Length: 425
Image (cartoon, rainbow, N blue to C red):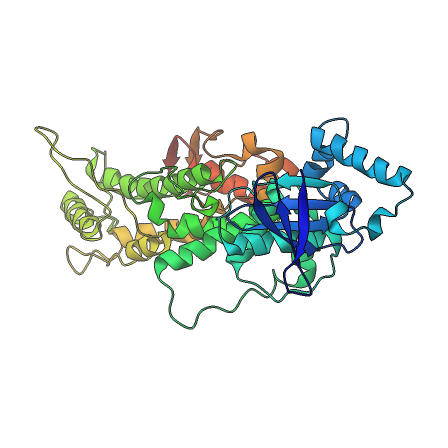
């Protein structure tokens, strides 16, 4: 690669012209005594960074491989040029940038071709060369791009440490004064989840994966698709998007089985009624409660009644959030066929069931440790527990590193069958 160096009028930067491609690169001295010119062009604008070969190789597995003279031509060419300069008794660290060996890169990973990505790449190199460089707390969008670049060049360790030490994680950017839309809230949630996944922030992964499962996604309202629009946070990597969609489906299936349990309990043939009046228990009370139950579930949108002959459409998928659904179920009135039947209805049986499982539902979020080290066991989609689950007994399968909490919620939500009858005291 040949070229010439020109002054730009800016005392910080100069302009390097690549004669082979007629491309202009703004020269930035990331390391004033660096011995390599790293020419990066992710969009229409190119920058040439003066960097340290040793720093790049020590901090990034990608650059360590690229600059290895025994593996890639780029590394071999850099080594030959540095040896030539050394034999000429030249102190390479004092040379102008025009005399340095050069390496070109054009792929920053799945980041937008915008100025934000260029600024993030510059900061990425700054952090590798000077982990104490100060930058004010940026928006999570910027940190997400920085994390993607770090992942692309296999240098997430230094970036993760920097984000922690700089306080960015504890002091996120101030929220906009204007009220955010649901889509903006989801975007922020997804970006933070992606940051957690790439930089190893276990608490962020657990928190924001739980929120996505609970609140749902605009992407999931019809079906899961991989049309991500070029932004990785809209289709999370490493199988996470599919897993979150599946866990949410399992959660709704579990809650739906509670409804089915009580409908079946009051409608199936039985030797004695569900009515709890005692000596005056009656089948008429059961029929009344079943009718009120069907009306309540239908009114709340959790039950759709259809005939089984002729043409009919499938029931519409529930797209609300889990909290709203639980709140709706808990609004069930105390139905009485007359003033004597105090404890015969759905409410007295439903409330204890909900109270026993609601505290465990947030544990449906992804545990980053288990996901990274034992994904095949941790995944609800790849490894459902199956079998029959009993309320109050819930079969608990020990997870890797003793992560029992999310093992219990997985056992309940991925069972083939659930019995919601409370255990006899």
